[in-house]
Length: 462
Image (cartoon, rainbow, N blue to C red):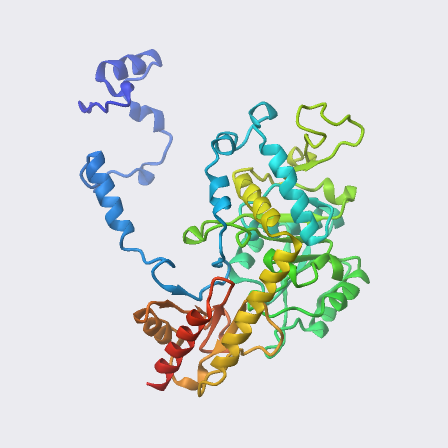
Protein backbone atom coordinates (compact mmCIF):
# COMPACT_ATOMS: atom_id res chain seq x y z
CA UNK A 1 0.00 0.00 0.00
CA UNK A 2 1.23 3.48 -0.86
CA UNK A 3 2.69 5.08 2.26
CA UNK A 4 2.47 8.62 0.85
CA UNK A 5 -0.30 10.67 2.39
CA UNK A 6 -1.76 13.76 0.76
CA UNK A 7 -2.46 16.45 3.37
CA UNK A 8 -5.84 17.33 1.81
CA UNK A 9 -7.10 13.74 1.41
CA UNK A 10 -7.42 12.21 4.90
CA UNK A 11 -8.65 8.85 3.57
CA UNK A 12 -5.17 8.23 2.14
CA UNK A 13 -3.89 7.47 5.64
CA UNK A 14 -3.06 3.72 5.41
CA UNK A 15 -4.86 2.82 8.63
CA UNK A 16 -8.02 4.67 7.56
CA UNK A 17 -7.92 3.11 4.10
CA UNK A 18 -7.53 -0.39 5.54
CA UNK A 19 -10.45 0.20 7.87
CA UNK A 20 -12.65 1.35 4.96
CA UNK A 21 -11.75 -1.71 2.86
CA UNK A 22 -12.46 -4.00 5.80
CA UNK A 23 -15.84 -2.35 6.34
CA UNK A 24 -17.00 -3.17 2.80
CA UNK A 25 -15.48 -6.65 2.92
CA UNK A 26 -12.61 -6.48 0.44
CA UNK A 27 -8.85 -6.71 0.83
CA UNK A 28 -7.71 -4.38 -1.97
CA UNK A 29 -9.12 -1.41 -3.85
CA UNK A 30 -8.38 -3.35 -7.06
CA UNK A 31 -11.44 -5.45 -6.36
CA UNK A 32 -13.57 -2.34 -6.89
CA UNK A 33 -12.74 -2.33 -10.60
CA UNK A 34 -12.36 -6.06 -11.19
CA UNK A 35 -15.15 -5.90 -13.78
CA UNK A 36 -12.99 -3.80 -16.12
CA UNK A 37 -11.28 -5.94 -18.81
CA UNK A 38 -7.58 -6.37 -18.22
CA UNK A 39 -6.64 -4.97 -21.64
CA UNK A 40 -8.25 -1.64 -20.73
CA UNK A 41 -6.21 -1.17 -17.55
CA UNK A 42 -3.11 1.01 -17.72
CA UNK A 43 -0.28 -0.98 -16.18
CA UNK A 44 2.73 1.11 -17.23
CA UNK A 45 4.30 3.81 -15.13
CA UNK A 46 2.63 7.18 -15.56
CA UNK A 47 5.14 9.81 -16.62
CA UNK A 48 3.85 12.62 -14.44
CA UNK A 49 6.06 15.68 -13.95
CA UNK A 50 7.40 16.27 -10.48
CA UNK A 51 5.17 18.04 -7.99
CA UNK A 52 5.57 21.81 -7.76
CA UNK A 53 5.12 24.15 -4.85
CA UNK A 54 2.45 26.81 -5.19
CA UNK A 55 5.08 29.41 -6.01
CA UNK A 56 6.74 27.16 -8.61
CA UNK A 57 3.37 26.33 -10.16
CA UNK A 58 2.39 29.99 -10.43
CA UNK A 59 5.73 30.82 -12.05
CA UNK A 60 5.37 27.90 -14.48
CA UNK A 61 1.83 28.85 -15.55
CA UNK A 62 2.68 32.53 -15.94
CA UNK A 63 5.61 31.51 -18.13
CA UNK A 64 3.29 29.53 -20.38
CA UNK A 65 0.76 32.35 -20.56
CA UNK A 66 3.43 34.88 -21.45
CA UNK A 67 4.12 32.93 -24.63
CA UNK A 68 0.68 33.90 -25.94
CA UNK A 69 0.27 36.90 -28.22
CA UNK A 70 -3.04 38.67 -27.78
CA UNK A 71 -4.95 41.37 -29.58
CA UNK A 72 -3.50 43.81 -27.07
CA UNK A 73 -0.12 43.47 -28.75
CA UNK A 74 -1.09 42.73 -32.35
CA UNK A 75 -3.68 44.19 -34.72
CA UNK A 76 -6.46 41.69 -35.29
CA UNK A 77 -8.52 41.15 -38.44
CA UNK A 78 -9.58 37.58 -37.67
CA UNK A 79 -13.24 36.82 -36.98
CA UNK A 80 -14.90 33.65 -38.32
CA UNK A 81 -17.13 33.07 -35.30
CA UNK A 82 -15.42 35.03 -32.53
CA UNK A 83 -15.07 38.73 -33.14
CA UNK A 84 -13.22 41.63 -31.58
CA UNK A 85 -15.61 44.36 -30.47
CA UNK A 86 -15.32 47.15 -27.93
CA UNK A 87 -16.35 46.07 -24.43
CA UNK A 88 -17.66 48.86 -22.16
CA UNK A 89 -16.06 48.79 -18.71
CA UNK A 90 -19.42 48.29 -17.01
CA UNK A 91 -19.77 44.90 -18.76
CA UNK A 92 -16.61 43.70 -17.03
CA UNK A 93 -17.96 45.05 -13.76
CA UNK A 94 -21.12 42.98 -14.15
CA UNK A 95 -19.04 39.84 -14.68
CA UNK A 96 -17.36 40.41 -11.31
CA UNK A 97 -20.53 40.94 -9.26
CA UNK A 98 -20.43 38.36 -6.53
CA UNK A 99 -24.19 38.12 -6.13
CA UNK A 100 -24.47 36.94 -9.76
CA UNK A 101 -21.46 34.66 -9.57
CA UNK A 102 -22.64 32.96 -6.38
CA UNK A 103 -26.23 32.70 -7.62
CA UNK A 104 -25.13 31.15 -10.91
CA UNK A 105 -27.83 28.50 -10.88
CA UNK A 106 -30.35 27.20 -8.39
CA UNK A 107 -33.70 28.21 -7.01
CA UNK A 108 -35.27 31.63 -6.31
CA UNK A 109 -34.01 31.78 -2.74
CA UNK A 110 -30.49 32.04 -4.19
CA UNK A 111 -31.54 34.63 -6.73
CA UNK A 112 -30.11 37.97 -5.49
CA UNK A 113 -31.61 39.75 -8.50
CA UNK A 114 -30.24 37.38 -11.12
CA UNK A 115 -33.70 36.38 -12.38
CA UNK A 116 -34.69 40.04 -12.67
CA UNK A 117 -31.52 40.73 -14.68
CA UNK A 118 -32.22 37.77 -16.95
CA UNK A 119 -35.76 39.04 -17.53
CA UNK A 120 -34.32 42.39 -18.59
CA UNK A 121 -31.82 40.68 -20.90
CA UNK A 122 -34.51 38.57 -22.55
CA UNK A 123 -36.73 41.62 -22.97
CA UNK A 124 -33.97 43.68 -24.61
CA UNK A 125 -32.89 40.89 -26.95
CA UNK A 126 -36.51 40.22 -27.88
CA UNK A 127 -36.77 43.88 -28.93
CA UNK A 128 -33.60 43.55 -31.00
CA UNK A 129 -34.70 40.44 -32.91
CA UNK A 130 -38.37 41.52 -32.87
CA UNK A 131 -39.58 38.26 -31.37
CA UNK A 132 -41.70 37.64 -28.27
CA UNK A 133 -39.76 35.01 -26.36
CA UNK A 134 -36.03 34.58 -25.67
CA UNK A 135 -34.38 31.87 -23.59
CA UNK A 136 -31.64 31.85 -21.01
CA UNK A 137 -28.39 31.52 -23.04
CA UNK A 138 -27.19 28.19 -24.36
CA UNK A 139 -23.50 27.29 -24.53
CA UNK A 140 -22.89 28.98 -27.89
CA UNK A 141 -24.39 29.70 -31.32
CA UNK A 142 -23.76 26.13 -32.44
CA UNK A 143 -25.82 24.69 -29.61
CA UNK A 144 -28.52 27.31 -30.08
CA UNK A 145 -28.84 26.42 -33.77
CA UNK A 146 -28.78 22.69 -33.07
CA UNK A 147 -31.39 23.04 -30.33
CA UNK A 148 -33.61 25.24 -32.51
CA UNK A 149 -33.50 22.66 -35.29
CA UNK A 150 -34.39 19.86 -32.85
CA UNK A 151 -37.33 22.03 -31.75
CA UNK A 152 -38.59 22.22 -35.36
CA UNK A 153 -38.38 18.45 -35.73
CA UNK A 154 -40.55 17.96 -32.63
CA UNK A 155 -43.02 20.64 -33.72
CA UNK A 156 -43.46 19.27 -37.26
CA UNK A 157 -42.94 15.58 -36.55
CA UNK A 158 -40.50 15.46 -39.49
CA UNK A 159 -36.87 14.37 -39.58
CA UNK A 160 -35.24 16.01 -42.60
CA UNK A 161 -33.35 19.32 -42.41
CA UNK A 162 -31.93 21.52 -45.17
CA UNK A 163 -28.77 23.50 -44.34
CA UNK A 164 -27.32 26.32 -46.41
CA UNK A 165 -23.90 25.23 -47.64
CA UNK A 166 -22.53 28.55 -46.38
CA UNK A 167 -23.21 27.66 -42.73
CA UNK A 168 -20.12 28.00 -40.52
CA UNK A 169 -18.22 24.67 -40.68
CA UNK A 170 -17.93 24.31 -36.91
CA UNK A 171 -21.62 25.05 -36.37
CA UNK A 172 -22.56 22.60 -39.11
CA UNK A 173 -20.66 19.85 -37.27
CA UNK A 174 -22.40 20.68 -33.98
CA UNK A 175 -25.82 20.73 -35.66
CA UNK A 176 -25.29 17.35 -37.33
CA UNK A 177 -23.79 15.78 -34.22
CA UNK A 178 -26.65 17.09 -32.06
CA UNK A 179 -29.29 15.91 -34.53
CA UNK A 180 -27.91 12.45 -35.23
CA UNK A 181 -29.18 9.82 -35.67
CA UNK A 182 -32.81 10.98 -35.54
CA UNK A 183 -32.39 13.74 -38.14
CA UNK A 184 -30.94 13.65 -41.64
CA UNK A 185 -29.29 16.67 -43.25
CA UNK A 186 -28.85 17.92 -46.80
CA UNK A 187 -26.95 20.97 -48.05
CA UNK A 188 -28.40 23.66 -50.29
CA UNK A 189 -26.03 24.93 -52.97
CA UNK A 190 -25.06 28.59 -53.30
CA UNK A 191 -23.82 30.98 -55.97
CA UNK A 192 -20.06 31.46 -55.60
CA UNK A 193 -20.11 35.02 -56.88
CA UNK A 194 -23.02 36.33 -54.80
CA UNK A 195 -22.95 33.81 -51.95
CA UNK A 196 -26.76 33.70 -52.13
CA UNK A 197 -28.68 30.46 -51.70
CA UNK A 198 -29.49 28.62 -54.93
CA UNK A 199 -33.29 28.76 -54.92
CA UNK A 200 -33.57 26.21 -57.71
CA UNK A 201 -31.61 23.72 -55.63
CA UNK A 202 -33.83 24.55 -52.66
CA UNK A 203 -36.95 23.81 -54.72
CA UNK A 204 -35.52 20.45 -55.78
CA UNK A 205 -34.77 19.36 -52.22
CA UNK A 206 -37.70 20.71 -50.24
CA UNK A 207 -40.65 18.41 -49.54
CA UNK A 208 -43.35 17.57 -47.00
CA UNK A 209 -40.75 15.51 -45.13
CA UNK A 210 -38.53 18.53 -44.35
CA UNK A 211 -38.81 20.02 -40.86
CA UNK A 212 -36.69 23.13 -41.31
CA UNK A 213 -34.41 25.22 -43.47
CA UNK A 214 -31.45 26.75 -41.66
CA UNK A 215 -29.31 29.59 -42.98
CA UNK A 216 -27.27 32.42 -41.48
CA UNK A 217 -27.55 36.14 -42.12
CA UNK A 218 -25.05 37.74 -42.30
CA UNK A 219 -23.56 34.47 -43.51
CA UNK A 220 -20.35 32.95 -42.21
CA UNK A 221 -18.69 34.21 -45.41
CA UNK A 222 -19.77 37.75 -44.57
CA UNK A 223 -22.37 38.45 -47.24
CA UNK A 224 -25.96 39.45 -46.51
CA UNK A 225 -28.56 36.91 -47.65
CA UNK A 226 -31.11 39.13 -49.40
CA UNK A 227 -33.51 36.35 -50.43
CA UNK A 228 -35.12 35.82 -47.04
CA UNK A 229 -38.65 36.50 -48.26
CA UNK A 230 -38.26 34.19 -51.26
CA UNK A 231 -36.84 31.39 -49.09
CA UNK A 232 -39.70 31.80 -46.64
CA UNK A 233 -42.31 31.71 -49.42
CA UNK A 234 -40.91 28.43 -50.77
CA UNK A 235 -40.78 26.96 -47.27
CA UNK A 236 -44.36 27.88 -46.38
CA UNK A 237 -45.70 26.01 -49.41
CA UNK A 238 -44.58 22.81 -47.64
CA UNK A 239 -45.20 23.99 -44.05
CA UNK A 240 -41.44 23.95 -43.46
CA UNK A 241 -40.13 26.08 -40.59
CA UNK A 242 -37.39 28.68 -41.09
CA UNK A 243 -34.50 28.91 -38.61
CA UNK A 244 -32.12 31.83 -39.13
CA UNK A 245 -28.81 32.31 -37.35
CA UNK A 246 -27.89 35.96 -36.92
CA UNK A 247 -25.07 38.11 -35.61
CA UNK A 248 -27.12 40.30 -33.22
CA UNK A 249 -24.78 43.28 -33.52
CA UNK A 250 -25.83 43.60 -37.18
CA UNK A 251 -29.45 44.26 -36.24
CA UNK A 252 -28.90 47.94 -35.63
CA UNK A 253 -28.91 48.39 -39.42
CA UNK A 254 -30.28 45.13 -40.86
CA UNK A 255 -33.86 43.90 -40.63
CA UNK A 256 -34.24 41.09 -38.09
CA UNK A 257 -34.96 37.60 -39.49
CA UNK A 258 -38.52 37.76 -38.09
CA UNK A 259 -39.27 40.39 -40.75
CA UNK A 260 -38.56 37.98 -43.60
CA UNK A 261 -40.30 34.89 -42.32
CA UNK A 262 -38.07 33.31 -39.67
CA UNK A 263 -39.97 31.09 -37.24
CA UNK A 264 -36.99 30.68 -34.91
CA UNK A 265 -34.03 33.05 -34.62
CA UNK A 266 -30.75 32.05 -32.99
CA UNK A 267 -27.22 33.39 -32.78
CA UNK A 268 -24.29 34.22 -30.53
CA UNK A 269 -24.22 36.85 -27.80
CA UNK A 270 -20.43 37.22 -27.88
CA UNK A 271 -20.50 40.51 -29.86
CA UNK A 272 -22.73 42.05 -27.18
CA UNK A 273 -20.21 42.85 -24.47
CA UNK A 274 -18.08 39.71 -24.20
CA UNK A 275 -14.34 39.44 -24.60
CA UNK A 276 -13.01 36.83 -27.00
CA UNK A 277 -11.35 34.91 -24.13
CA UNK A 278 -9.31 32.70 -26.48
CA UNK A 279 -12.57 31.91 -28.33
CA UNK A 280 -14.28 30.94 -25.07
CA UNK A 281 -16.61 33.89 -24.45
CA UNK A 282 -19.55 32.41 -26.32
CA UNK A 283 -23.26 32.18 -25.45
CA UNK A 284 -26.12 31.30 -27.76
CA UNK A 285 -29.71 32.54 -27.81
CA UNK A 286 -32.99 31.25 -29.22
CA UNK A 287 -36.00 33.46 -29.96
CA UNK A 288 -39.53 32.67 -31.16
CA UNK A 289 -43.03 34.05 -31.31
CA UNK A 290 -45.24 33.72 -28.25
CA UNK A 291 -47.02 30.63 -29.51
CA UNK A 292 -47.61 27.52 -27.46
CA UNK A 293 -46.11 25.13 -30.00
CA UNK A 294 -42.77 26.96 -29.72
CA UNK A 295 -42.87 27.72 -26.01
CA UNK A 296 -43.41 24.07 -25.10
CA UNK A 297 -40.27 23.04 -26.95
CA UNK A 298 -37.80 25.36 -25.20
CA UNK A 299 -35.35 23.26 -23.17
CA UNK A 300 -34.18 26.19 -21.05
CA UNK A 301 -35.52 28.80 -18.64
CA UNK A 302 -37.85 31.56 -19.77
CA UNK A 303 -38.74 34.67 -17.81
CA UNK A 304 -41.87 36.71 -18.31
CA UNK A 305 -44.60 38.77 -16.72
CA UNK A 306 -47.54 37.24 -14.86
CA UNK A 307 -50.39 39.69 -15.57
CA UNK A 308 -52.73 38.05 -13.04
CA UNK A 309 -50.42 38.79 -10.09
CA UNK A 310 -50.22 42.10 -8.29
CA UNK A 311 -47.09 44.14 -8.81
CA UNK A 312 -44.64 43.76 -5.95
CA UNK A 313 -46.17 40.53 -4.64
CA UNK A 314 -42.87 38.73 -4.99
CA UNK A 315 -40.81 41.50 -3.47
CA UNK A 316 -39.19 42.71 -6.69
CA UNK A 317 -41.96 43.61 -9.09
CA UNK A 318 -44.24 41.50 -11.23
CA UNK A 319 -41.48 39.95 -13.35
CA UNK A 320 -40.51 37.14 -11.02
CA UNK A 321 -42.07 34.39 -13.08
CA UNK A 322 -39.74 31.57 -14.06
CA UNK A 323 -41.08 28.99 -16.49
CA UNK A 324 -39.07 25.82 -17.08
CA UNK A 325 -40.48 24.08 -20.16
CA UNK A 326 -41.81 20.58 -19.73
CA UNK A 327 -39.52 19.70 -22.64
CA UNK A 328 -36.92 19.15 -19.93
CA UNK A 329 -38.97 16.37 -18.39
CA UNK A 330 -40.07 14.49 -21.47
CA UNK A 331 -38.02 11.54 -22.62
CA UNK A 332 -35.78 12.28 -25.57
CA UNK A 333 -35.74 16.04 -25.19
CA UNK A 334 -32.40 17.67 -24.62
CA UNK A 335 -31.54 19.64 -21.51
CA UNK A 336 -29.76 22.99 -21.54
CA UNK A 337 -27.92 24.20 -18.46
CA UNK A 338 -27.68 27.73 -17.12
CA UNK A 339 -23.91 28.00 -16.90
CA UNK A 340 -23.93 30.83 -19.44
CA UNK A 341 -26.61 32.87 -17.67
CA UNK A 342 -24.05 35.51 -16.70
CA UNK A 343 -23.27 36.14 -20.37
CA UNK A 344 -26.95 36.89 -20.92
CA UNK A 345 -26.89 39.45 -18.15
CA UNK A 346 -23.77 41.00 -19.73
CA UNK A 347 -25.49 41.19 -23.12
CA UNK A 348 -28.48 42.87 -21.49
CA UNK A 349 -26.25 45.52 -19.90
CA UNK A 350 -24.53 46.07 -23.26
CA UNK A 351 -27.84 46.58 -25.10
CA UNK A 352 -29.16 48.91 -22.43
CA UNK A 353 -26.00 51.02 -22.64
CA UNK A 354 -26.15 51.46 -26.41
CA UNK A 355 -29.87 51.79 -26.94
CA UNK A 356 -31.51 51.83 -30.42
CA UNK A 357 -29.56 54.79 -31.77
CA UNK A 358 -26.29 53.43 -30.43
CA UNK A 359 -26.84 50.08 -32.15
CA UNK A 360 -27.60 51.89 -35.41
CA UNK A 361 -24.47 54.05 -35.15
CA UNK A 362 -22.39 51.01 -34.27
CA UNK A 363 -23.61 49.02 -37.27
CA UNK A 364 -23.09 51.99 -39.56
CA UNK A 365 -19.50 52.42 -38.33
CA UNK A 366 -18.72 48.75 -38.85
CA UNK A 367 -20.07 48.75 -42.42
CA UNK A 368 -18.20 51.92 -43.29
CA UNK A 369 -14.95 50.50 -41.94
CA UNK A 370 -15.30 47.22 -43.82
CA UNK A 371 -16.18 49.05 -47.04
CA UNK A 372 -13.10 51.25 -46.64
CA UNK A 373 -10.78 48.25 -46.33
CA UNK A 374 -12.30 46.45 -49.32
CA UNK A 375 -12.18 49.56 -51.49
CA UNK A 376 -8.47 50.05 -50.81
CA UNK A 377 -7.54 46.37 -51.08
CA UNK A 378 -9.06 46.44 -54.56
CA UNK A 379 -6.40 48.97 -55.55
CA UNK A 380 -3.64 46.41 -54.92
CA UNK A 381 -2.55 44.50 -58.03
CA UNK A 382 -3.82 40.89 -58.16
CA UNK A 383 -5.91 41.27 -54.99
CA UNK A 384 -9.72 41.24 -54.90
CA UNK A 385 -10.90 43.06 -51.82
CA UNK A 386 -14.17 41.14 -51.80
CA UNK A 387 -14.54 37.89 -53.73
CA UNK A 388 -18.31 37.96 -53.22
CA UNK A 389 -20.17 40.78 -54.94
CA UNK A 390 -23.15 40.89 -52.54
CA UNK A 391 -23.31 43.50 -49.76
CA UNK A 392 -21.54 42.48 -46.57
CA UNK A 393 -21.46 43.57 -42.94
CA UNK A 394 -18.16 43.18 -41.05
CA UNK A 395 -16.58 40.17 -42.76
CA UNK A 396 -15.58 39.65 -46.37
CA UNK A 397 -13.54 37.24 -48.50
CA UNK A 398 -10.23 38.62 -49.80
CA UNK A 399 -9.08 36.74 -52.91
CA UNK A 400 -5.31 36.18 -53.20
CA UNK A 401 -5.38 33.60 -56.03
CA UNK A 402 -3.71 35.89 -58.59
CA UNK A 403 -0.83 36.82 -56.26
CA UNK A 404 0.88 33.43 -56.49
CA UNK A 405 0.96 33.30 -52.69
CA UNK A 406 -0.95 31.06 -50.32
CA UNK A 407 -3.05 32.50 -47.52
CA UNK A 408 -0.81 30.64 -45.09
CA UNK A 409 2.25 32.46 -46.43
CA UNK A 410 0.50 35.84 -46.39
CA UNK A 411 -0.65 35.32 -42.80
CA UNK A 412 2.84 34.30 -41.71
CA UNK A 413 4.23 37.49 -43.22
CA UNK A 414 1.47 39.54 -41.58
CA UNK A 415 2.49 38.08 -38.22
CA UNK A 416 5.99 39.46 -38.70
CA UNK A 417 4.30 42.86 -38.99
CA UNK A 418 2.30 42.19 -35.79
CA UNK A 419 -1.00 41.67 -37.59
CA UNK A 420 -3.40 38.73 -37.31
CA UNK A 421 -4.68 38.06 -40.83
CA UNK A 422 -7.95 36.53 -41.99
CA UNK A 423 -9.22 32.95 -41.68
CA UNK A 424 -7.78 30.67 -44.37
CA UNK A 425 -10.74 29.32 -46.36
CA UNK A 426 -8.78 26.98 -48.63
CA UNK A 427 -9.80 23.85 -46.71
CA UNK A 428 -13.38 24.63 -45.68
CA UNK A 429 -14.32 26.35 -48.95
CA UNK A 430 -11.87 25.05 -51.58
CA UNK A 431 -13.99 26.56 -54.36
CA UNK A 432 -12.52 29.92 -53.41
CA UNK A 433 -8.91 28.70 -53.59
CA UNK A 434 -6.42 30.91 -51.78
CA UNK A 435 -8.85 33.27 -50.13
CA UNK A 436 -9.22 34.47 -46.56
CA UNK A 437 -12.11 35.73 -44.44
CA UNK A 438 -11.19 39.11 -42.94
CA UNK A 439 -13.11 40.93 -40.22
CA UNK A 440 -13.28 44.68 -39.56
CA UNK A 441 -15.25 46.17 -36.66
CA UNK A 442 -15.68 49.42 -34.76
CA UNK A 443 -12.41 48.86 -32.87
CA UNK A 444 -10.34 49.49 -35.99
CA UNK A 445 -9.19 53.04 -36.52
CA UNK A 446 -8.27 54.46 -39.92
CA UNK A 447 -4.60 54.04 -39.00
CA UNK A 448 -5.23 50.37 -38.16
CA UNK A 449 -6.94 49.74 -41.49
CA UNK A 450 -4.28 51.63 -43.45
CA UNK A 451 -1.62 49.57 -41.69
CA UNK A 452 -3.28 46.34 -42.87
CA UNK A 453 -3.67 47.62 -46.43
CA UNK A 454 -0.05 48.76 -46.56
CA UNK A 455 1.18 45.45 -45.14
CA UNK A 456 -0.74 43.35 -47.68
CA UNK A 457 0.47 45.57 -50.52
CA UNK A 458 4.11 45.13 -49.43
CA UNK A 459 3.71 41.36 -49.10
CA UNK A 460 2.12 40.72 -52.49
CA UNK A 461 4.42 43.14 -54.31
CA UNK A 462 7.59 41.67 -52.85
